[in-house]
Length: 342
Image: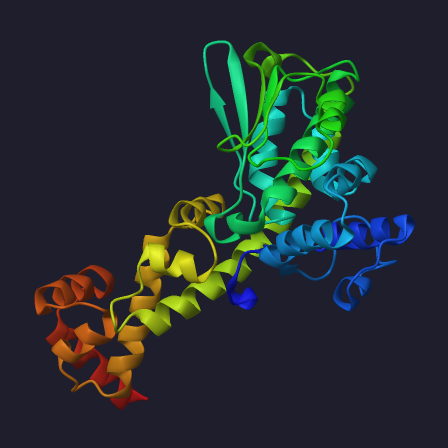
């Protein structure tokens, strides 16, 4: 995987991981040591590969020789470590709203996270997952996320709160009694996925201490940050689409794969910024068409079709008519006049 083209993440997890390992006397790689002593809260000025974060966590568990490493790290983490996202979650009026804003803004911390909530008659299943390209080595990351989320739930629901059940998606090699003591509920190990199951009625239970003014402040801040990240993502998409138009590979699934995510995740992230893959594909085609014909208005429409990834001239004609309100011949004449006037 080319990390430069993958989903991105705030390096906050690396800052905290380096500090945790230093505090416990674990040896760390030179790459990770660079993050030691850096700001331990989210909202850094630069981003790193989300896949690199996930794989680094996995490698640290392996190199430590301690199968309970991730559990200890997730307990050690400051609950406010993930900055505005955690602070916003703390100000939500209920868990349902917290889940909505969490799903929306988790992209500002780690764009590889792909969580969901499945609702049943009496239960809510909080499913923790990552995008397919990161899933191979994500077990430790997802275990840590489950532990951290339960800690957050207890912060707003009270320390006595516990899930109904928990499913851990791999055969845990550490001390299972540590997890049982922490979750205080039945645990299924080596399950198909990572899930926290709670009573559905708890989702709408009012939370004490939420502040509407603070919630609005953090939501506005994170909306601006999400917009900045979306612009960066859109630039990457446009570059990939332009490079793959001619050979017909500028499809949603192919572009998403090159970005290290699923087509569904890419669509969701674009929708969050008011865009879509279809809109972006059309925008790139418009620019390619104009640049191609402005360079030489006498070029054949058939050749333009190949440049745009179309196999027949009727599709090209419809594209030109829809986007430029002109047939191919009329558009070329218009461009000739404009070029001549220039």
